[in-house]
Image 1 (tube, helix red, strand yellow):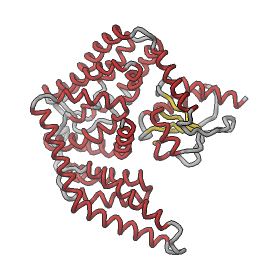
Image 2 (cartoon, helix red, strand yellow):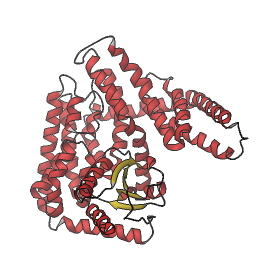
Image 3 (cartoon, helix red, strand yellow):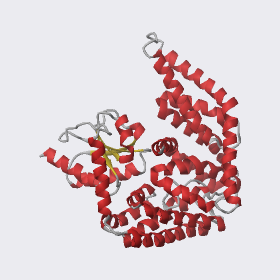
Image 4 (cartoon, helix red, strand yellow):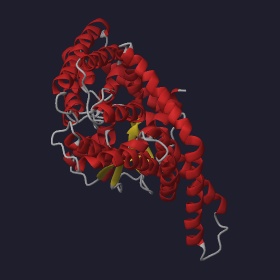
Amino acid sequence: MKERAQRAGRFLSGMVMPNIGAFIAWGLITALFIPTGWIPNETLAQLVGPMIVYLLPLLIGYTGGKMVGGNRGAVVGAIATIGVVICADIPMFMGAMMAGPVGGWCIKKFDRSVEGKVPAGFEMLVNNFSSGIIGGILAVVFFMLISPIVVALNDGMGAAVQFFVTFRILPLAAIFVEPAKVLFLNNAINHGIFTPLGIEQATAQGHSIFFMIESNPGPGLGLLLAYWFAGKGTAKSSAPGAVIIHFFGGIHEIYFPFILMKPVMILAAIAGNATSIAVLMIFDGGTIAAPSPGSVFAQLLMTPPGNFFANILAIVLSAAVSLVVGVLLLKVFNKGDEDLDAAQAKMDDMKAEAKGIVKSGTVNMAQLDKIVFACDAGMGSSAMGATTLRKKIKKAGLNVEVVHHSLSEIPAGTMFIVTHKELQERAATAAPTARIVPISNFMAAPEYDMIVNELLEARK
């Protein structure tokens, strides 16, 4: 069940993350030009509606179709998405997340069914007409049958959230949000649930609290500071660097291993997030769009005029509460050395690999010239890990390129992949002949030094 939820969440986030730039563009235009913005402009404000109603859902549908069916799937996914987009005045993100992958799946199945059966010279004709016919049929189906269901689901979600808001119990959402984040469902929660709700609310009132429920860096900051002040071993020494990457870089995944290492610390994150939500509710805080990545800079950039006090106070107080609770928990439960847990995790990984759970190819390290660091979206944790590994390789005087990609876009012929241990099976599926090195700690993985040492030995 946990694995299925993670896969579903990663798939949802994979449709949204590549299009974050478009969300930020919409947020900036909205923050600047709407009547309550920084520089109100009635003419330029006309961009806001079409972007949120048409552009963003179509991009999500296009990306979802591409994830399933490649470039042809992307086109059919976008055609299918327009069927759910035009039947409602609200942004149909949920519908796009359904229509895009379905379009990609349908064209993929069609291509497989006619593979090797198309007469020579008719390939382009069959490809173009099949995309048009299947896409057109799906657009009609989603317009007539699926759109009403999506609207009803959206209304139901809105009513459920409104229940929490009406009875002033929205801070309880932290009880579910923080554990789900640690299971690497953070992007799915933020962009699959809170972003659609937030956009609808922001369109009506100029800002939304939902954009900050998952993305606020305060709880994670407090937790990392607690490890810095009261932790032991590797956790204590890694915390200062993790603070910078988390708070200023916005990569929240950096603090997840600190909780997985000592699960009771999830209480500190929950307390901090609940505090943040309560402050935002009391002072009517929120941002104009989804801050991504969830750094303090992105939070402030997406803050509309009049909300700076509430948003900054929410970040500061959530960090303070998380810090205090985290220090108390470490004082009570920190009887051992976190290094022992890290060693146990590494041992479990070695056992799993020995049992053949992960297919890992062999590679000539003396001739290896490229290492791929892969994650869900190929943007956050993989970029950070690639940077860390690249610096170590460069310091060792080695000429090996280190790049980062999403799991769905690992280049053909890749021979060496570094990824998080939760993603290693997907990496093995994407590149069955590659050697895969699973890690647990993006910033200070001992496997980085292992890779460098192997390269040095091979070069000798």
